[in-house]
Length: 157
Image (cartoon, rainbow, N blue to C red):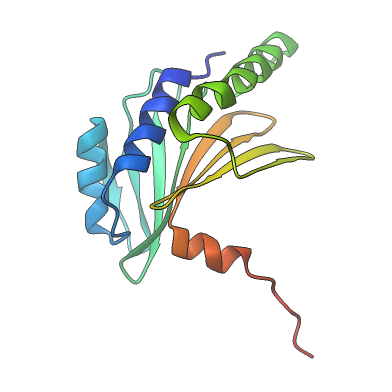
């Protein structure tokens, strides 16, 4: 089980420094910067082949009306099939925040319940790392989309 801390740090640094417009046209430029390749496009997103040294080196992009909402990629091998692999996944995730703090500064927030999530709100991107039962993922979110997600939702009656 491998958590790609160097790859996550490279992605985070690139995302923080990238000149985002959050339009679909950003995807090719962002991928090019990282040495990634857009594998397929659809109406609401794209699949990307990353160059991360993990078992499933892929990322997904989701957009609406040509505005990118987020990019999500695994940064660890998967699946977790043994207790030894689970311990390695936990150890890799435990090292990740320190490496990202060096690049991004202190996190904006942390949440630990069924999944551990750490968040950085940066001027051009909101970045999350998440530990689930089967992998560690990194998500790059449009600040505008994240602000909408963070708004309280009220039930109308």
